[in-house]
Length: 400
Image (cartoon, rainbow, N blue to C red; front, side, top):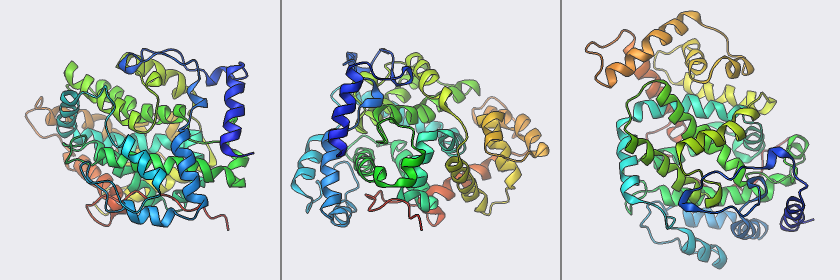
């Protein structure tokens, strides 16, 4: 049964109520005042581009498409030439912001990212990045896809998405995020087509449809990034105005819209986002073989950067950010000396950064070095200060 035909059958099943409670997303207050279609987000993919990229893959055009999109970087760049006509038409229609995007808020979000980049680097890198390894569907999909076999490259490409989103001109003509989001959307569509052909993934996948990266999965990833970061900034008492918080949320609303999430599923407020995360993210976090392997690689990338940091300090900061349960799932050894330094030093580091403490705290240097290590590990695999181009995968993870 083809992917698209199977989707049709399963969507009918959803309409008939043959879906478990875990598949149902409540009618959250949605962005742009969107109303619910009644279809759970677990049963929504990206059908138009999914079919286009399936054809690209089946027709042996992946290499040509990658060559065409490689120099396509800035939002105001002309669309690539040499693409299959259906893909060129699709990009023509989708390489733009949603109608409800507010450039005033997006510019404020960019300034907020600039002012809080120290914490964002830390939280996206050691927080969200490691949390992704205990999101079972995400960990399994990443591990068994092509990128899972080269996590240095995969991490660098993932970092490219966050890096471009956080840039000052991210959504403006001179920025790069709209293009980056569209390239990521092409990658997702290709993975949906080829990952279900891999028996190793099928053996561990719990999606009832055996099709990865639904709208619900993208929402889960958003909550492990934007919603998680927002909660930690509040917990750490990092000063944020209401306008800053709203702008930060808006940048993420636009980002996941550009990835193909329907407006009806995108929460309109932070209260809605945190309530949604409590249902779709928090309960699903757990240990998997694939996640354990990925976490070790990701933490290894940071610890390999020679900036005088011990692996114990890295493990303890991960535990500090994500909590004991996740750290224990990942079998992170304890380093109680580092734990003490972090517990006392990190709040003081924040206070000094925010101008609330007149004297530089002890161990300030350690935290600065950790931030540098995260950036160096994920920018182009640690080989330069440039981001890594996002490309369409031409295969799954090699299994022999």
